[in-house]
Amino acid sequence: MKPDPKLNRIAPDEMPDDIASAWTRSMDLRGDATFFEVFANHPELYRWYVNQFYGDVFRGGKVAQRYKELLRLRLSTLLHGCRFCNQGNRLDALEAGLTEAQIAAFESTRIGAVYARRARRTGAGRLSWRSRNSAGILSEALHAQLAAHFDDAQILELGLVGGILAGVAKFMFAYDLVEKEDSCPFHPVT
Image (cartoon, rainbow, N blue to C red; front, side, top):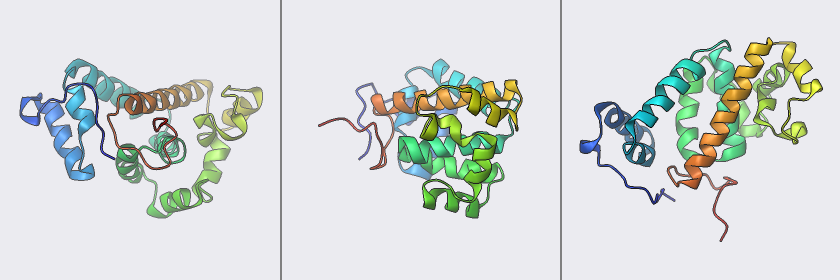
């Protein structure tokens, strides 16, 4: 079902150029750009999210891009059920160096048998705060697992990225800005 937000939707010809450009790309990829129509109400907030979070932290930082892409793909496919995110995250994962076979194995098994084995060793998959880490804490055991592959600055970065992505997904669903998959746990209760 297409999103139906309560907030005002700005027409593409009334958007700032950067948001209008993102709107066009989203329409080409997804056939929906509600997220951009609503965020055009607050261009500065949109630019913070795109430039500071995605530019400086997600695509910058101390952790290799492929691990952050794997974390994001895991969150959107296995936990959130965000159709909007899944359509873009898959392409971004390919651009970060993951192969179609790795992504297909990851998606088809719902655990990611081939590539997620490495993610489990590095802890990237566990940072979704699911599975055995249902308490949602950085336990001594999880820290030791992560510390075998990442230093503390990288562990902090992965945790913050996962937390922001999970929070933004919940926000996008609560404000009805994106299309959800049938598996989305944030569908409204009827």
